[in-house]
Length: 111
Length: 152
Image 1: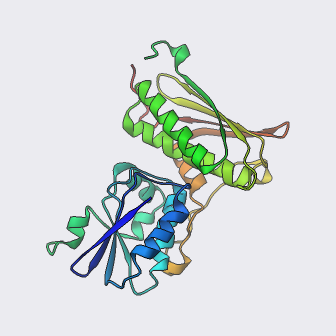
Image 2: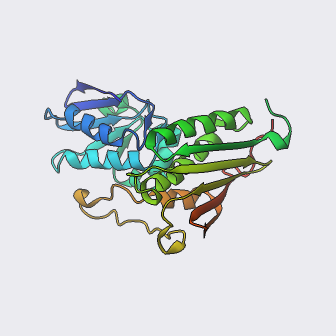
């Protein structure tokens, strides 16, 4: 699994370049997120728009990635596909993260 | 494409490793699609099945010593009936767990990183039953996410 990152204003956008975050890649996801977010940026937006399958191991890895950022930076999430959105809602984790419709809306001034 | 009800059955045996689980899910989703199941219902099935298979791999077989999992799915007009058999450790107290939702109001560092598997399964599946018989685990459940799966 690859995570690509780019900076838009004060935000780092980390885009998961894989269609699944499951138990086979959960540990790898955490490591790649640690690497991607090493540089200090005010905000971190995790773009999940390419991900169409996330199970509870994958969700656990997303929570772990948020904890890795420490208390100074919040992990924001963008681009939930229908199936992934369902997992966030079922587990009520949609109440924990700031969720944006897309990476673009997460960084546009209008939002 | 299968047309009669007899042929709408999926049977497979897989090893309890995360890569074998991934391959089995891909296989099942493709066959369900061929049976005429919508993508939305296919994805609900994939999620529930992933949680069940991960539980067997991580708890029944304790990750370190993979074993076989037998999976059978029957598609009826309105639902899928799923049957799983494994030879791993029994469920605690020989019963389906009754998960509680974790308190999410505390500090970020205290948030749970798991424990959602059974919540997801019990939220989406119906008639979940478990039996321990002759050192094997038998788990059965039904899925009818839209209450009306599409016909061929």
